[in-house]
Length: 355
Figure (tube, rainbow, N blue to C red):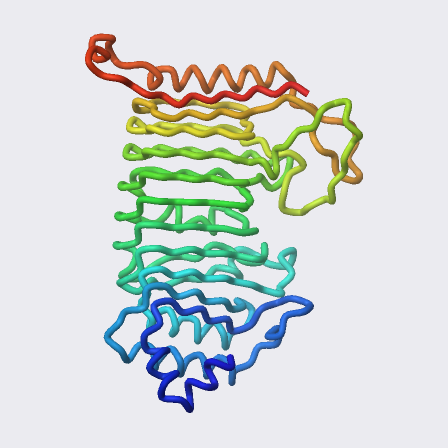
């Protein structure tokens, strides 16, 4: 903020601000020790003047990092103006809210995000389960190539429009991390015809009874990485029992109801510490990299849980068998005649743990 105040009176700072390739604007931030925890319209207006001054020049804004609170209408209004005015190629939004997520309904938390035409990379970082993914619209939808959804939020049928009900014709990279599934999700070529890289990291299910499936039906997909170390870890039976706190938004142990994969051009497959009741791999391409890591052992208990739950050796072996059975067509050349005069390098890693 000292730089912003100086820029309003110093011509030298004004010229420097007009040349900044990346802008990082924080309207307010929750936290016990946060110096800007209280919303301030004066502070936000100062940022607006700085952004207008920056956009007067000919140099484009390459990246805009914007932090604000969705439960403060004043900040939301200015955020929409900041996004449109900057027209940045990379847009990173950090969203917070003090609203109690237990009192929120999906209809009340629905919101939309209009992407400017120059935006090709969007990263949404959510810090509260009271927030839901937005409905993306605007001219930037047709040019968006990279999308990241990161942080504690619930993916449900109403809040998953950006993944299942929206056409993203240019999207190539999709990363979903640390979210919670309340229902099944479908990632298909119909909505994302150019999708090449998909990362699903530490995505849990809502409760132990939640039946949530992940269906990946992407004809152009090249790389798939699945990992869930945070919510599907196991322990040796001999180890002293560890307890964790109960949560309204994560199951005791994440197990997807089913996982369906159809990716005829897939080249890299990684599956680390993920579990599913049913796994079906319909088709893959000629694989150049495979990593599978699953374990049998004791599930971490939460306070108040009755009994001890295990991932048995039989469950682990069945999952491994299903994975290898589905990947086998991509682990060998179509005909041995193709091997003559060529060398095929396959990185193959399998980890089986028995505690």
